[in-house]
Length: 115
Length: 113
Image 1 (tube, each protein chain N blue to C red):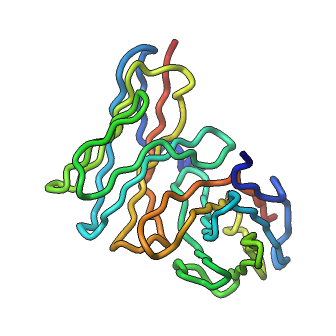
Image 2: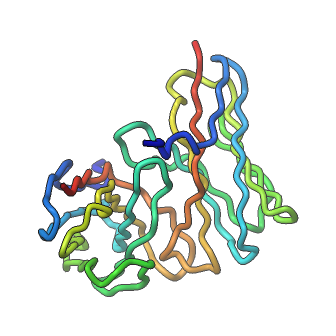
């Protein structure tokens, strides 16, 4: 069975540019969450989407946005990139959101480097 | 410059020994806890979870203990193997909402052959 997949695996951008990261959840999972992991730290929650609607948002600026598509895949967009946006961006999927606790399963991440 | 990795708690054990990784959480409203294993260059891998109405849960070679009185969580790994070497994170889900996991700092486990 395929797990959570993310693309691209690595990305290099320059300050001020825009980036789009993509995620496909585990088959049957309807919820996708995005996390940012800076080197040496634990993942920090950015967004959760369920049935194409935003269910939660972390403490990130409006430069960060996301959406979920009818097939439950998701995109994370970051505008006006800053050096501090360099991180591993993780996508996690779960079967249900907001009803009862469901385990979140993570993808391999997209390593973003902003120069 | 200083590496943020120097601030990561570390645990070094011999192959075959048991490992205990500890985690403190701050929010008494947290009701769901998960341990993840993260190998270098990979995403976090689910190990085991526990709900707040339980004190202990066992999996294959792993046991999670939850002490709500002192807000403490531990992961015990039996007969630690070199493949267990990784960073281990505890994560908590606060207030019953599934939408946000809050991760701890992480512990680097090194297993010496």
